[in-house]
Amino acid sequence: MKKYSLYKNDIFLHDFDTMKDCSVWLENLIGGSLYEGLRALRTGWNPQEHSQLFGYEVKTNNQQ
Image (cartoon, rainbow, N blue to C red):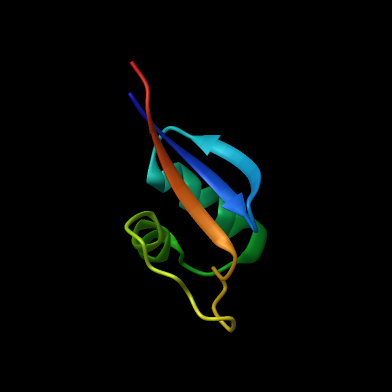
């Protein structure tokens, strides 16, 4: 089963079962619509400093 881990400036924040769960959780904290941006982070996008997602990273953990 895939798990998604969210980090801010290399500090672990939370684990999620789906990217949607991750986006809802983060949207409640910082606002905005973040699902597409979080998906892009997972695939290697590096946001600029003015982005709401600057400093965030999504890592995928494949668990059995």
